[in-house]
View 1 (cartoon, rainbow, N blue to C red):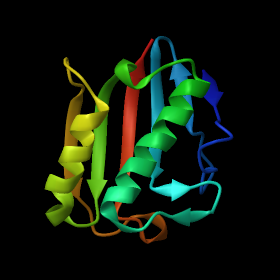
View 2: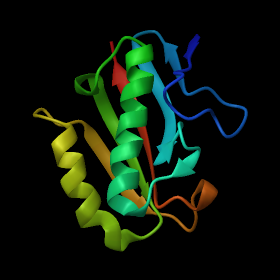
View 3: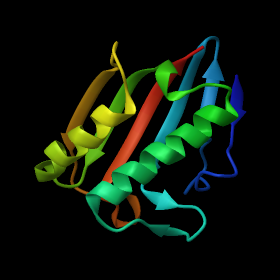
Length: 123
């Protein structure tokens, strides 16, 4: 097993790796809309969603992968009413064939975030 840490993505908020590779699969921990440079969450669901995807791309890059290598996405929302907004931004991130995806609302997310996105990618 090999772990990856990008200096561009926010540091882990706990005892976990940003991503772990086993065989030809990369498991990426959930990313919030946290900007590493400011140490703050971006304002609003649109900005947090875009930042979360940037953070994911930074981790993928560190592991030698790209967004097109994602095979599964898990989207956690603090408010299911944000689903359509997130879905529009999500659609801009991928081309066909789209990765498999799950999306649902949860009671709370770390640091008061509005969204957390976790991905699995393949080499």
